[in-house]
Length: 611
Image 1: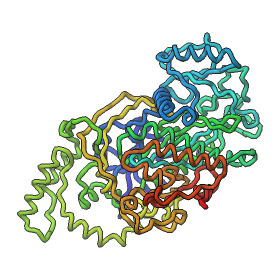
Image 2: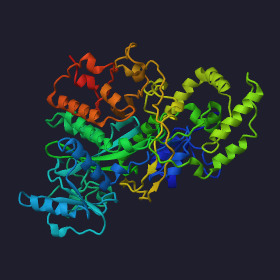
Image 3: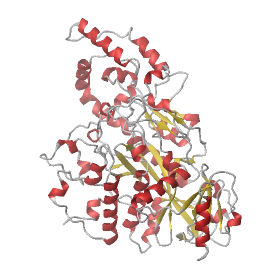
Image 4: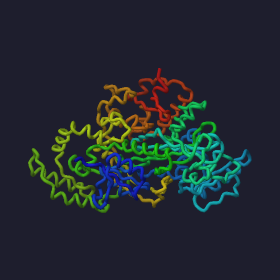
C-alpha cells in the first residue's frame, strides 16, 4: 500500500483546505499517532515561527514565506510604496492613493488637508493599521471628524469608483508567490468581485453598506439577501461574470488586465530583495483592487491569509478551485509521501532553508528537536548497506560526516551510490504514479502542464541560502487568525549559489515558447523554467527573457520596471513589438508568458507580435 501525503492544519484551519485535501486522498496529521516531523504540508493563517523554517525538511511545505509583512500590513505597505515612489518616480507608483501614517505623519497630513480644501471637495478614509475585515474604518470630509485611539493610516478616498447599477465594488485577486529567489509569481484566473449592498452616495459617508465592500460587513446589511439590480442577491460575483460585464464596456480590456498585473508585480518588488529564500514555501496573497470611473485600477491593500470561508456559491466555485490549483503548484513528488524514508534513501543532508544575509549565530545554539534526538539514536540501529568499498573506509567516512553535521542537522548515513542505483532502477515504474500523486483524481490540471521535466529536484534547492526573520503583525483577512508577536532569528552566513535545474527538453504544452538554441550559453538554459499555467494559475512573472534574466541571482528591479513599462506602453498603443538587435539580446533565450485576465489568456507574443 502506497503511503499518503499528510497535511497539518493549525487550530483546525480553513475547512475548505481540509475538504479539498481529503478528497485528493491526503491524510490529516494526528500528533498523538505521528512523529513531530511526519507531515508534508503545514497550513496556518498566522505566521510561522522562525524555528519552523529552520527545521523544514525536503518533503515538507509551508503556506507562508517569511518576512512578507512589508506589504501585508497597511502602514508597512504605505512606507514601502512611498520609498519606491521616491526612487522610481510618482508616475510609475501612482496606483495607491496618497497615504499618511498617524500619529507620525500628522503634520504632513494637516498640510495636505489644508492644501486640498481650497479646491473641490476632498474625502478621506481612515483605517487602523493592524485590523482587517473592515473593522474600525470610517470616511470623513471634515478634519473635526478625525478621531482615533491607535495607529491609523489615512488615504485620499477614491470618490469616483466604477459602479455597476449604482453599486460600488472591488476585485479580490488571488496571487501565489511560488518563490522570491528567483521571483516567480502566479495569478489565479478566478477571483471575487465584492459589492457594497446599498447604492453609492457621497452624501451619506457614514453608511458603510454603501462605501465598503467587505463581506464581513455587508452580510449584516438589511439588503444582503435582497435581489439587487444586476448585482443579484448577496454581494459577490465570480471573476468570470465580471469579464462578461467588461465586454459590454468600450475599453481596452487587455490594457486593464495588464495594469492590474503591473500593480501586483510592482508591489512585490518592494519586498522581494529582502525576503529570505525558502524554496519549500508558497505565499497566497489577496490583492484588493478598486477600478475608478476612468477604468484606472487602484491598490487598496494586500491581505495575508485571505479568507477562505464559504459564504455563498461564488465562494465555493472560486475557493475550492483555488486551493486545488495551489496544491498542484506545490509540486509534490512520489518520494514526498515517504517522508523520512525517502530522506534516508536519497541522501538529503541539509535542511531546505539557509542564510545569506544572516548574522553569525551558530545553529548549535538551537534546542535539539525531538526529530534530531530520534535520528541520533537511529545511527546505532540502521542496518549496514552492501557496498563495493572497504567497510573500514566507510566507517571513517561516516564518522567524519557525523562530526561535521551533527551540530547542524539530523545525521544521515547512507550509500549514495547504492541509493542512485535504486532510484534509477525504479524510475520508469514511478513516473506515472508520481504524476497521479501530484495532481490526484480531483486535479483540474493536465499532467503535461505540470510535467516533471519542468520542475527541479529537491536536492538543488538546498543550495539556496538566505537569512530568516519573521515579522507576524500583518493585514489578515482570515476570520480565524489574529496578529502575533514579532519573532526574529538568523543563521550563519553561507555563500549563495543558484538553484540547479536539469537541462531537458520541454514538453509539448510549452508550444508557445520558442526553443532554446543549442549554441547559446548553458547558464541561462539551466535557470528556472516554470510552467506557463497550472490549473487556473497563470504565470505572470517572469514574463519574458529579459525579466527571467533580471530575476536570477540579484533581482534587477530597474530592469524589471523598464520591461513592465515597455510592455504596458505597447498594449496601450497596440503597437507591435520591434525585434531587438542580436547584440542587445546577448544570448538570451526566447521566453514567453500568458497575459493574465482574459477568459482565454493569450500569449504575450501574440498580443505584441514582432515583425
